Length: 328
Image (cartoon, rainbow, N blue to C red; front, side):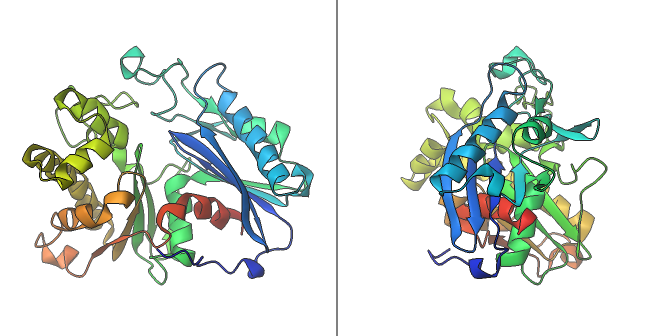
């Protein structure tokens, strides 16, 4: 992606909107209006204290972002929140049952500093920021990124497509027949928690053992390979780039796992194109993309011929634009 923004900010509504990207590692907040995307602030995701800590952090960061942009929170016309999931609806309000945030899901073995079953999100925002005149829309980050990629990125013009993020976790947004799939609680697309292995050592933060996220997500790579000398995903890729045969074999294996998940999406939904982004994939996209494509090519041609895996058109800005797409 070039430094040129694909968005015509001049065509946006005049009143500013807040764009919130809640991830398992960090929270980023910006405001957007006809002057562009500005006032960006970011912090590590709150994971300690009471289970409303994350929601209150987001509310506080919205205020800081507005101040940095020379605005008041009361100036906001809408608040778009692109958040890692899954979601739980409690009296109609969104709470997060997120494996990389809520330590109560998998227990102490997962190493998170809390025992939360859910993290409150919508209730603190409605108490602290969102008013009767401020639209609040919260979507799974895979859905939000899918909407952004269909509007401004690599999925423009495609009615049967998906967005996949390969980052701290594995997230997916799905579109079939031009309709974005959401499901009963906004959780459609959580293919990262589909089972692919009997590896009992691969503990996901959701409590599953042997699901896709437990084997290939950014934090899973650290847990699985640190003892073998690769401190984190970045170290593993650096070693592979330097010709380390063992590191390359490990990457080939995690690409086989994720590639099979991509194949299963294509086989199940008859997709045309999948755009891929995220903090693990994006810096290493040229290395990873052919390895992922190899898991589709030649397998049941009636389903896979012509199916494209492509880098996210919005690049490393997809999280910011995902939140914007919800309310722009």
